[in-house]
Length: 210
Length: 210
Image (cartoon, rainbow over all chains, first blue to last red; front, side):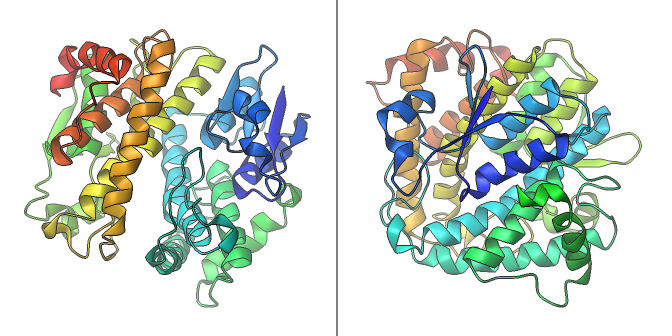
């Protein structure tokens, strides 16, 4: 099994953190996004969407899309579960993971991709060219601010995003916060004390270095 | 168990089709989106995001987000599986379901929400107000056209979206195509013969009436 990834990709980081939390030993193969290696014929043969990460199984099956890769690794290596153990817990974690993605992670990505000069004509990842839309930069920043407020409220009632235990929803929320802080200069605001308490805890886990 | 839904919501339709495919008997409670009932204090107490659908379990747990609801129903009622049975199949279906959503379903929704006069100031579903961005209408239509081309290519190599068997990925793709055809006047183009063959087959299943 091999994971095609890039150190600079927040998408790939979500998978690397899960791998670190589960203590898995999976070969990492770097894809040089700066050199546009994801658009090479060799990589497109692995993932026609031309994005990282991609998990390639020993039989050659290529799994793209972060939640699909995470689900594969959880089912194949059920120890140290991160996607829940009971039917209800699995559903609640799926809900919160998705909320962290739709409300925090993807808006942060959207704000960056529509702003950066080097991504002109590449406002959406994938094989198709789309122009940048300047209004999406400001909207993305506003959505991240709302994400911070809403998840601060959530973390005043629960220690982790999906409830009492660390889960994949914390991984997605951590990747969102760290990317927004670094690439958009939008750190957690001081009044979001529960979000800050949570971030201090999850960022101190060794997996956060992944 | 109760499902809060709306007949007019393509999101809710994805859950209703899954319920019909699995032959489940779940109480459906309509939420009147035209009367903005989703923003009522009573409904916000059930789902603070103020969107449909929401599945409420007998112990009061509220599950929002379509893939989370679908996952709950699949785990609770494993007969007639729609999310896969083996580890690999579950991951491949998750990947294709997500692709159908990100490349077809959400772009169609985006094009509509940014165009319709009645959704001014409500360009994104959820509790926060966001202005419409006219460029997203044209970009959404372009993304749907690319979705049709890419999924036509996929369906030239496989009978169903995720492979040999009908799955939740077909439900999402069907909901995307039907919504784009109806709300954007973007039907499957005549050259997409594999996509058309697939649509004829899945739209003929009784579940498509849901």
